[in-house]
Image (cartoon, rainbow, N blue to C red; front, side, top):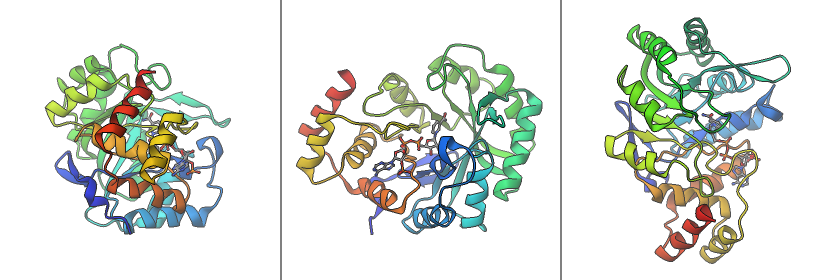
Amino acid sequence: MTDITTAGTYALGDRTVNRMGYGAMQLAGPGVFGPPKDHAEALAVLRQALANGVNHIDTSDYYGPYVTNKLIKEALHPYPEALVIVTKLGAVRGDDGSWNPAQTPADLERGVHDNLRNLGLDAIEVVNMRVMGALHSPTEASIEPQFTALAKLREQGLIRHLGLSNVTSTQVAQARSIAPVVCVQNMYNLANRADDALIDELAGEGIAYVPFFPLGGFAPLQSEALSEVASGLGATPMQVALAWLLQRSPNILLIPGTSSRVHLSENLAAAELKLPEAALATLDGIGKA
Ligand SMILES: NC(=O)c1ccc[n+]([C@@H]2O[C@H](COP(=O)([O-])OP(=O)(O)OC[C@H]3O[C@@H](n4cnc5c(N)ncnc54)[C@H](OP(=O)(O)O)[C@@H]3O)[C@@H](O)[C@H]2O)c1
């Protein structure tokens, strides 16, 4: 079994987590809507992740909706002390599967209580405020109303730490003037490098950066250079993509998503993959292409 601690740990609020974690979004049905295609396999994936040392799971009640949180509770509750579950707020799903903003103070309060109930928790360790922006990339706009509302829920003890998702550096600064921010979750991977400067900035502040779509998301990464590097190292392209992120910056925490135990094992094994300088140079070229 892979020793995922080889990839090291990083602080998430006042907790320390293994840098190799797991993202639960893929456990919901097609289009992140409805029940999983294989309920037993979904539970097995979650249990295998923990058995392999994962102690950081990313989720949201808008996956399904309510599907992934209920699966996490069914598979893992009562939770081990070391497990940090991070959820996010900011959207609700329509009956047609649409993703609709839910960012008023009342929406956020309802969302926190839904997450507490569906996960079976008295307080949520980390809640990310998911800003809408332009779908998967941020746009400049004030996030003061939403973040102030979440900060109030934190003061009530329902949330222990706050994070942000789909935000710019200016929005991070605005949020930090309201309450501490422990993590930022934006789209970033080998081929999408818009956040290079933000990652370095956050590293300097001790804030975790958690890339979503680390494998490319709904269209997993495909690149000749990536495949060549992978075959030269006896690894898979997905493993190389994850190892590259681990080597990119020490504040990067990984939450690759999968609905299969085979892919989970493959992804976790990236924690033990060290990329040589020549491979890093080739891979760097992918984001610049
Ligand atoms: N904050 C946000 O706005 C936001 C947005 C999106 C996602 N997220 C979070 O980020 C996490 C990761 O993102 P993601 O799951 O969307 O994308 P991802 O991790 O980049 O990729 C997941 C896709 O890759 C496939 N995959 C996984 N491992 C593989 C492997 N070893 N070989 C081949 N294919 C593989 C998965 O299919 P299989 O199921 O078949 O393995 C799935 O289609 C999510 O779980 C969620 O928690 C956050």
